[in-house]
Image (cartoon, rainbow, N blue to C red):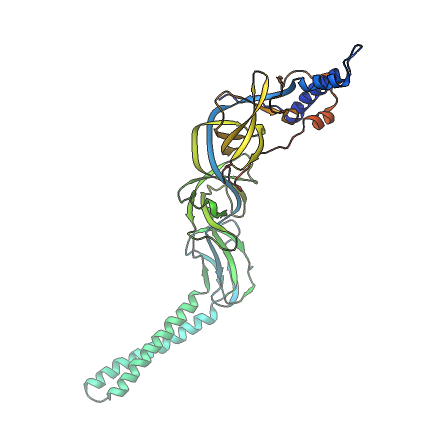
Length: 395
């Protein structure tokens, strides 16, 4: 689609200001036979003001919400030592891929092994005694109370043995999830205290970004909507994900709700990367748009533009819609092809004469330098109101 002929702001301002200054100088400082001061002022008022214009045109527009967030790994485990002991072997390093149940660190297990052997011997002794007691009970040579005591002692010994085997298994520190090793704390020979984090494992196959969105967007964002992501660490690359879930409540203190977007890492995205997210929640395939620099006195959804008709600039109210970069949708007030002023608005009055100039034309010699041009043609930039961080002029 053809784009309006917009040029560099400095160069455009220079051309417009140079021509405007030349016209004023020619009128105010005429040669012999110049008119009186009042006549010169009237002539200066009637002199056309040089401006640049752009045509209102149709193009696709999208309503979107933008925000920033850090990527986080939802699957992350701080692996702790469930028993104390000296680290005999550290079997992984940062960056290693591990699977669930894989041994990461081996601790000294001599004490736990001896306790397991002791409890096993006591258990076998009580098992043999229990078998003999059953024969004695059948012959009525052992009381029921003594038989129950032996039976309960055996059950207790079996529980103690199972506990000893569990303690022995803690000497092999295993990963609870599959992922990549992000941090390893102990070195071989270090003493590890019980319940101390020693290895951090991260499942980075899927990463999440959490946005705190203003409550006015609650009706527009929902799970499953596409999300685009750009990260500072990977310039020029764009990643696509989706909204995984939306918090059902608004936090009273901040007036925001949480939106969690999920992305496949693909081995490229890493936890902790800072990203810029964009959620497109509505699209218009054939919206009537003008450059945002054409807006005058924009207030929320209402604004004005200067439309050039037969060399006359006319202020016209317009109703605004979505904003997409340097373009803004006009829902009412303009027709396709309407010429709107995009440079030189500061010197134009409603109903005044204007001259449409070519931004590629050479500059006039006596128009002054770029500084003078900025002083004549300078005007506030970015007058289209945005809805918070959402690219929409509606409120």
